[in-house]
Image 1 (tube, one colour):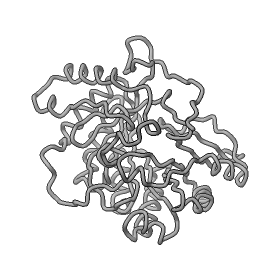
Image 2: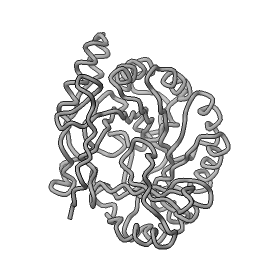
Image 3: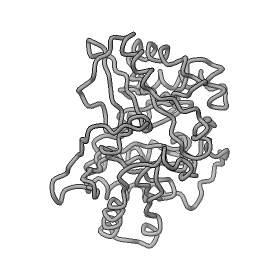
Image 4: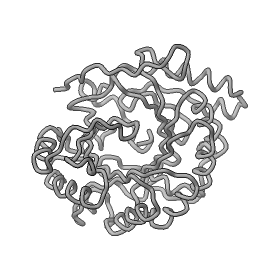
Length: 340
């Protein structure tokens, strides 16, 4: 059963920034730079193609820079690069450098599976990337192979350690908890993260597309209780990024574990984010179909004022909440098509 959290609306001053019809301030953009991936995770299933050529319908770096610049002027200070696997996009450090230099972008981060991070971590840090989130669902080689479709554990671990050495911190490890797949790995992952100074974030599988609905949903309530007891965790009052995770910390405050619960304890009342696909589609909710097509405006030479007006109008379409439980069959796209 879905339980509403206490109302914690984020109100923007009148006339300032982006605010939807429910009073929520939107200050976080998740930006997909590719829908391709070198893994085939069971809850995501991105496209198989690793073709070198980039489709004409993908936004160029210049177009991405224009859109992010408009968002930044509208008060969106947090930008996260996602995919697919963003490190598959050619010359990604050039885009990072461009976005990091934009006035108003205060927090530029990256979500990655880390299989290619060992090669790129130092360059990304120099380009202006602040921090990374890494998808890692297990420390067991066979479990990782089963979930990701590839024997990828060594490459992922090398990437994580390269990110740490390069100073891309904090490093958050995103673990999608799945019943009958990796739930037995949760405590091991927590211990590993705390020992290495990483932040573990446990995520409930979301029913996005057929694969997401078959991922083996697991409520995090029981896992949270076990981890709180084993590691003597306390509620964390500090803000650790602009996302939806609720964090608990060790008694000395040095270690944190986050819980992202879109199903068992949805956080729609405080949602502060929108997603832009690599093709220029602005999605207002991961669990609804409201959207706005920005690519036609960009390629018809719309002015920045027209782009701003389109974005403001789109924010008014942001729904009050998702329908993951009421209508799980509604969302047919892959997670990689939406932008993580």
